[in-house]
Amino acid sequence: MIPPTPHIAVADLRVGWGSRVLMEHVNFEVERGTTFAILGGSGCGKSTLLRHLIGLERPQAGRIEIDGVGEPHRYAGAPHFGVLFQSGALFSSLTLEENLLLPLTTWTSVRGATALELARAKLDLVGLGPFAEHLPGEISGGMRKRAGIARALMLEPNLLFFDEPSAGLDPITAVELDQLIVTLSRDFGITIVIVTHELPSIFLVVKDCIVLDKAAKGIVARGDPRTLRDQSTIPFVHSFFTRSSPAHSKRQGV
Amino acid sequence: MSVEIRIERHTNNGRVSPVGAFDLLHAGAVERAVEDAEPRLDGCESIDIDLAHLERIDGSGAALLARFFDRLDAAGRHPRLVEAGNPEAERLIAVYRRSRADRMPAATPRSGLLARIGQTAAEFPATVNSALDFMGRCVIAVPRAIAMPRSVDWRSLPKLLQEIGADALPVACAANLAVGVIIGFIGVSQLGRFGAVAYVPELVVVAHFRELGPLVTAIVVAGRSGAGLASEIATMQVSEEIDALRSMGFDPVRWLVVPRCLALVTVVPLLTWLGDMLALGGGLLATTAITAMPPRAYVLATMDAITPAHFFLGLVKSPFLALVIGVVACGQGLATRGGAAAVGARTTTAVVLAIFSVIVISAVFTSFYAALGL
Image (cartoon, rainbow over all chains, first blue to last red; front, top):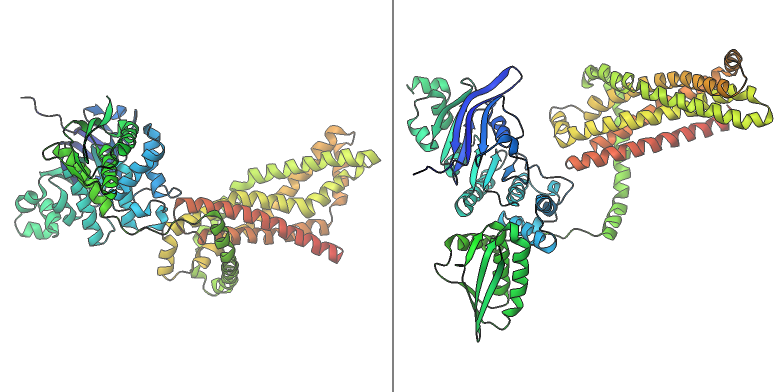
């Protein structure tokens, strides 16, 4: 039996600027319909790896395939994935509704009342229906992130990337956002890739992850975050999941 | 792939069967099918919905069907899903129907044009008040900056002098040279009719030294550096850098506005003086090019025309014009609220206001000189 093609395949990736190598020999695959996380400490290159995955940066070496298609072909037409940037990245001169209509009217033939209906439905989905005519500057940071998710969903992608979705949010808003991510994965079957270091979010939504380490310049662990927390013998990974200092982990014999 | 909604009716009961691909690609066809189906269900008291014939469904198709079922529900037609039809479609439609049910109370609608005009008029006194407040803070900042030199970012001064002065040199000189050429041509064409070409050098000196030199240089600086200063401070404002300064006990007016205004007040008179020299050259080029006046005669006539009054009355204006550019640009930058669009809007306002203020102040000086007989 032929195994199913992974949704994302990264092979022997090297990332860096000029002669500076941030990470190398990065290999991993993301299965369809899973919620996958890229974890690691500050400055280890999580967001940089995400920027490579979505095609904003070119790798120094290696290959990234989404749906079996390599990087050069990814922006040939309408993108097949959605991205939520850290700040929501909404266009501040457009209302939420107009922000959502932008990809729809650019990449599809849907116009008029149908387009408005779809935009309103997505805003309702993230709980922002009544704020359709507000400008991004008139709503809170958590709402901007939810609107960013609604915009990312407009072209019905089967893959979503989230860059630090819970960063800067209060615990209740962060949990609501996590639950929205769970809904998108469970009910819509969307493959989700999250860059984060928020442990509560990781344990709530993530089933598979890689852990990046700045010192190792690459992946140091791969698997279910709960399993890594309970069983990993790598001091950095143990420290990361238990919020203890690496020195403490070494003293504990991990 | 065709998209349709099949309807079967048995007296007061109906059966709705969406058929085909209900996805984003066919969203227009789905919407038309829904619009076509709704009137055909008039009078039904209960409707069975069979999703088994859906060939494909995604979030967009589910959203449009969810809205359709919501409307049937609102009309009292009691739509009911047929069991085991299509679990995936049922799940997606349920997500969209639930999200609509979770709707929060409606927000205040956006105000219309007339209301916005009224709001702007009502806010005008507060705008004037905040402008006067900012000017007052600028005035107070000067003695405080002298008393507490460490409260001013002096390290930025060389860079500001470079950006506002040296970097603006080519465009300021080119503009003044061009104005000198224009005055020369106009002088020759108008004074030449009376055989008074010999007075063209004096016209260039008087017009440019007293009025046009400071004005042209200030307008160039307002457009170039005014926009730069306003957008820089506006960006700092929206990225909370100004708040960070305040939280650390710095006065943004002293830390940011004082060095920028000082740089402008230092550099603009120098640019004006250089511009004056270039304008004399422009007048010389124009006059000698189209008349028989030799360059040496033009230079001698120019030297006779330059008096300390002409020279200094123009240069005295320059620091004031520079100051108004700095205060307007920095004031607009600090007043920015919102995101990237607000930065652009404030920058535009800063440039327009700075150029307008420069012209008004120049006119005030001219009137003042005329009243004093200077």
